[in-house]
Length: 202
Image (cartoon, rainbow, N blue to C red; front, side, top):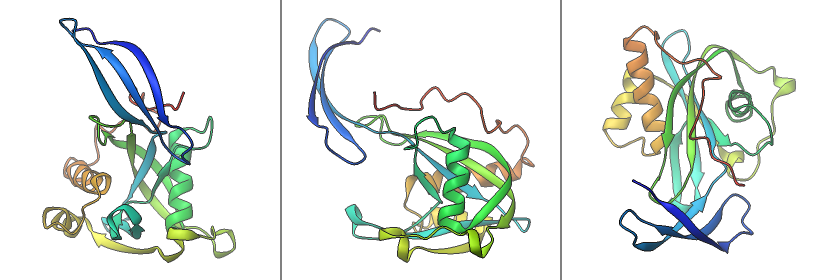
């Protein structure tokens, strides 16, 4: 099947993170339709698992839903040219005051492919240690009130299935980590594995 872009009309381009466009697309069979969608820079998230098989979650306020959510340390791919795994390590340090001696690619997600090109790569981080006090990042805005907690991996899975973890990336990351643990962490992709879905704002 062939889908051809006929035209693109910007609708909103002054946002800090996203742009919104309307595409005119030729469909199989020749019909033309309009599709509104969001251009997103992409993101990374980290499932940090310690030597006791506990997973680190952060509690963060999210304005669109008006409440705090259990999430993974995560952030936008907003540093030009920065490898995704470096972004992941930076977010882990900034949001959780943690470092990891090993990163593996855990799962790649397209969060809302019917409305956005947002893609997030979730890394599994192991060999965990703390960031020295003097080197810790000063959090601000919504991150200023962020708290962290460790949960047994089994407990985190129960939180997903019980509805306590609603953030999509966190739910997928926890379940993927549980599956990876059950397989002895074998067969995981390396931290620099190809990522065809990584979006771009160009």
